Length: 222
Image (tube, rainbow, N blue to C red):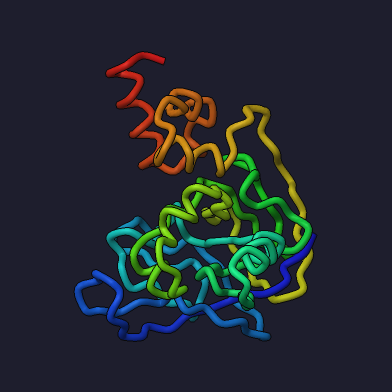
């Protein structure tokens, strides 16, 4: 398992985002230099966990629980075959393009060591948005991505560190609860009856998903 590509984005103006200034940093491009990864701070004020990477819409992106976004190269390859077009590393706005790691089915709370010191923890899947659809230029992309459910994973920073493309990735902790990033995504989008199961992941879960699960159980039981 390795970090195939390390991708950073700069703010650019586009017509397909509802960010107040019309800016997005979703167009991530591979870099060949080391990058420091740290916890960026709370959502709403903290952006990306990667030095030199830009998050423009702090209402929905960035912050400690979405500090890093990872996508498996294998999932990009599958989409290439389905869409009939090439998808470069970083095409989905991911910071980490991995190889040999099942990212969408990683467990909530699963921890990865990347390189010599960085430790990341899986918090949930990525919900597609208008900006993602506009960036890819695929009609109906939000629905299509949601149906497939290969969401990649958001991660928080447990131990900061410097990484670069080619670094090894090791799974250093794997919880026993069975709640994956893919399940969290399904529960919070199209299959809300799964929400009670998310509670097994406890505090490792993204706080917004945890709040949704608790609210559902309070109303409907679990």
